[in-house]
Length: 210
Image 1 (spheres, rainbow, N blue to C red):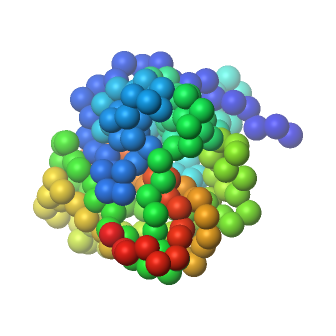
Image 2: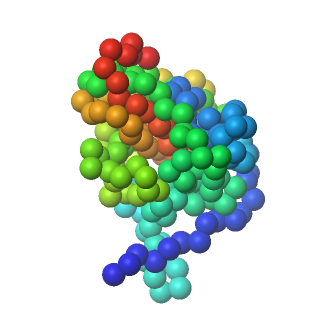
Protein backbone atom coordinates (compact mmCIF):
# COMPACT_ATOMS: atom_id res chain seq x y z
CA UNK A 1 0.00 0.00 0.00
CA UNK A 2 1.30 3.42 -0.92
CA UNK A 3 1.91 5.65 2.08
CA UNK A 4 -0.33 8.74 2.09
CA UNK A 5 1.45 11.96 1.25
CA UNK A 6 1.41 14.81 3.74
CA UNK A 7 0.91 18.16 2.09
CA UNK A 8 3.80 20.55 2.58
CA UNK A 9 3.17 22.79 5.55
CA UNK A 10 2.45 26.41 4.65
CA UNK A 11 2.58 28.05 8.06
CA UNK A 12 4.51 31.26 8.44
CA UNK A 13 8.21 30.90 9.28
CA UNK A 14 8.83 32.06 12.82
CA UNK A 15 12.09 33.13 14.45
CA UNK A 16 14.55 30.31 13.92
CA UNK A 17 16.66 28.38 16.36
CA UNK A 18 19.54 26.40 14.85
CA UNK A 19 21.35 25.07 11.80
CA UNK A 20 24.49 23.16 10.80
CA UNK A 21 27.10 25.50 9.39
CA UNK A 22 30.10 23.13 9.22
CA UNK A 23 30.03 21.10 7.08
CA UNK A 24 27.76 23.43 5.18
CA UNK A 25 24.21 22.11 5.22
CA UNK A 26 22.10 22.13 2.08
CA UNK A 27 19.95 24.99 3.37
CA UNK A 28 23.07 27.10 4.02
CA UNK A 29 24.38 26.35 0.52
CA UNK A 30 21.02 27.35 -0.95
CA UNK A 31 20.87 30.49 1.19
CA UNK A 32 24.39 31.63 0.27
CA UNK A 33 24.71 30.61 -3.39
CA UNK A 34 22.12 32.15 -5.75
CA UNK A 35 23.46 30.11 -8.68
CA UNK A 36 21.78 27.04 -7.18
CA UNK A 37 18.40 28.62 -7.89
CA UNK A 38 16.89 27.61 -4.55
CA UNK A 39 14.79 30.27 -2.87
CA UNK A 40 14.81 29.61 0.86
CA UNK A 41 14.36 31.83 3.91
CA UNK A 42 16.59 31.83 6.98
CA UNK A 43 18.45 28.53 7.49
CA UNK A 44 17.61 28.08 11.17
CA UNK A 45 13.85 27.55 10.88
CA UNK A 46 13.50 23.99 9.57
CA UNK A 47 11.46 22.97 12.61
CA UNK A 48 8.90 20.18 12.92
CA UNK A 49 7.74 17.79 15.67
CA UNK A 50 10.46 15.67 17.25
CA UNK A 51 10.44 11.88 17.37
CA UNK A 52 12.29 11.17 14.10
CA UNK A 53 12.30 8.67 12.52
CA UNK A 54 9.21 7.13 14.11
CA UNK A 55 6.90 10.12 14.66
CA UNK A 56 3.47 9.81 13.03
CA UNK A 57 0.27 11.83 13.07
CA UNK A 58 -3.33 11.03 12.17
CA UNK A 59 -4.79 13.20 9.41
CA UNK A 60 -8.20 12.58 7.84
CA UNK A 61 -8.09 8.96 8.95
CA UNK A 62 -4.61 8.37 7.56
CA UNK A 63 -1.34 7.79 9.39
CA UNK A 64 1.30 10.24 8.20
CA UNK A 65 5.01 10.33 8.96
CA UNK A 66 6.48 13.69 9.98
CA UNK A 67 8.62 15.02 8.44
CA UNK A 68 7.18 13.34 5.36
CA UNK A 69 9.28 10.98 3.28
CA UNK A 70 10.49 12.66 0.10
CA UNK A 71 10.44 16.00 1.93
CA UNK A 72 13.00 15.34 4.66
CA UNK A 73 15.35 18.09 3.52
CA UNK A 74 12.59 20.72 3.82
CA UNK A 75 10.90 18.85 6.70
CA UNK A 76 7.72 19.39 4.69
CA UNK A 77 7.79 23.19 5.09
CA UNK A 78 6.67 25.03 1.96
CA UNK A 79 9.31 27.82 1.83
CA UNK A 80 12.08 25.20 1.91
CA UNK A 81 10.66 22.83 -0.72
CA UNK A 82 13.48 23.64 -3.19
CA UNK A 83 15.81 21.66 -0.92
CA UNK A 84 14.02 18.36 -1.56
CA UNK A 85 15.18 17.83 -5.15
CA UNK A 86 18.07 15.42 -5.81
CA UNK A 87 19.75 18.31 -7.63
CA UNK A 88 19.36 22.05 -7.15
CA UNK A 89 16.60 23.93 -9.00
CA UNK A 90 19.23 25.24 -11.44
CA UNK A 91 20.23 21.67 -12.30
CA UNK A 92 23.58 21.84 -10.52
CA UNK A 93 24.52 19.11 -8.06
CA UNK A 94 24.18 20.20 -4.47
CA UNK A 95 27.61 21.20 -3.12
CA UNK A 96 29.12 18.29 -1.18
CA UNK A 97 31.88 18.45 1.41
CA UNK A 98 34.75 16.00 0.79
CA UNK A 99 35.24 13.64 3.74
CA UNK A 100 37.65 10.78 4.38
CA UNK A 101 36.20 7.25 4.58
CA UNK A 102 36.69 6.18 8.19
CA UNK A 103 37.83 9.67 9.17
CA UNK A 104 36.37 12.16 11.64
CA UNK A 105 34.45 15.34 10.86
CA UNK A 106 33.52 18.25 13.07
CA UNK A 107 29.78 18.90 12.94
CA UNK A 108 29.11 22.48 14.04
CA UNK A 109 25.65 23.78 14.91
CA UNK A 110 24.90 27.48 15.38
CA UNK A 111 21.99 27.97 17.77
CA UNK A 112 20.30 31.29 17.08
CA UNK A 113 18.08 30.64 20.10
CA UNK A 114 19.14 28.39 22.96
CA UNK A 115 16.89 25.68 24.35
CA UNK A 116 16.89 23.05 27.02
CA UNK A 117 18.15 20.11 25.00
CA UNK A 118 17.56 16.38 24.89
CA UNK A 119 19.97 15.21 22.21
CA UNK A 120 21.33 15.44 18.70
CA UNK A 121 21.02 12.42 16.45
CA UNK A 122 22.59 11.77 13.08
CA UNK A 123 21.83 9.47 10.17
CA UNK A 124 23.57 8.78 6.87
CA UNK A 125 22.40 7.31 3.60
CA UNK A 126 22.88 3.60 3.08
CA UNK A 127 25.26 2.35 0.41
CA UNK A 128 22.17 1.14 -1.48
CA UNK A 129 20.43 4.54 -1.40
CA UNK A 130 19.44 6.00 -4.77
CA UNK A 131 20.38 9.67 -4.49
CA UNK A 132 18.68 10.44 -7.79
CA UNK A 133 15.46 10.38 -5.74
CA UNK A 134 14.30 12.61 -2.87
CA UNK A 135 15.45 11.50 0.58
CA UNK A 136 13.28 9.04 2.52
CA UNK A 137 13.65 7.24 5.84
CA UNK A 138 14.37 3.88 4.28
CA UNK A 139 17.42 5.41 2.58
CA UNK A 140 18.98 6.22 5.97
CA UNK A 141 20.83 4.29 8.66
CA UNK A 142 21.84 5.53 12.13
CA UNK A 143 25.20 7.27 12.41
CA UNK A 144 25.40 8.40 16.06
CA UNK A 145 23.41 9.85 18.95
CA UNK A 146 24.73 12.54 21.32
CA UNK A 147 22.83 13.24 24.53
CA UNK A 148 23.20 16.64 26.16
CA UNK A 149 25.04 16.17 29.50
CA UNK A 150 22.41 14.11 31.29
CA UNK A 151 22.06 11.08 29.06
CA UNK A 152 18.62 9.60 28.31
CA UNK A 153 17.11 10.73 31.61
CA UNK A 154 14.14 13.00 31.03
CA UNK A 155 14.08 14.11 34.66
CA UNK A 156 17.42 15.87 34.18
CA UNK A 157 16.58 17.83 31.02
CA UNK A 158 15.24 20.75 33.03
CA UNK A 159 18.18 21.17 35.42
CA UNK A 160 20.92 20.92 32.77
CA UNK A 161 22.27 24.24 31.44
CA UNK A 162 21.59 25.46 27.93
CA UNK A 163 24.10 24.39 25.28
CA UNK A 164 26.42 27.14 24.12
CA UNK A 165 25.40 28.78 20.86
CA UNK A 166 28.33 27.25 18.95
CA UNK A 167 27.99 23.46 19.39
CA UNK A 168 30.62 21.08 18.00
CA UNK A 169 30.44 17.30 17.63
CA UNK A 170 33.32 15.19 16.36
CA UNK A 171 31.78 12.31 14.45
CA UNK A 172 33.51 9.21 13.14
CA UNK A 173 32.61 8.54 9.53
CA UNK A 174 31.92 5.08 8.12
CA UNK A 175 34.01 3.67 5.28
CA UNK A 176 31.72 4.68 2.44
CA UNK A 177 32.42 5.81 -1.11
CA UNK A 178 31.03 8.58 -3.28
CA UNK A 179 28.20 10.98 -2.47
CA UNK A 180 26.03 10.57 0.60
CA UNK A 181 23.68 12.64 2.76
CA UNK A 182 24.00 13.12 6.51
CA UNK A 183 20.68 13.91 8.20
CA UNK A 184 21.10 15.84 11.45
CA UNK A 185 18.37 16.35 14.07
CA UNK A 186 18.45 18.52 17.22
CA UNK A 187 15.76 17.51 19.72
CA UNK A 188 14.97 20.30 22.15
CA UNK A 189 13.48 19.54 25.57
CA UNK A 190 11.33 22.59 26.26
CA UNK A 191 9.14 22.34 23.14
CA UNK A 192 7.60 19.46 21.20
CA UNK A 193 9.80 20.18 18.20
CA UNK A 194 13.17 19.41 16.65
CA UNK A 195 15.34 21.09 14.03
CA UNK A 196 16.28 19.21 10.86
CA UNK A 197 19.30 19.67 8.60
CA UNK A 198 20.58 17.75 5.58
CA UNK A 199 24.28 17.79 4.70
CA UNK A 200 25.71 16.62 1.38
CA UNK A 201 29.10 14.89 1.62
CA UNK A 202 31.43 13.12 -0.79
CA UNK A 203 33.62 10.31 0.52
CA UNK A 204 37.03 10.65 -1.09
CA UNK A 205 40.38 9.11 -0.11
CA UNK A 206 43.23 11.33 1.08
CA UNK A 207 40.99 14.17 2.25
CA UNK A 208 42.12 16.00 5.39
CA UNK A 209 39.55 15.61 8.15
CA UNK A 210 37.66 18.75 9.14
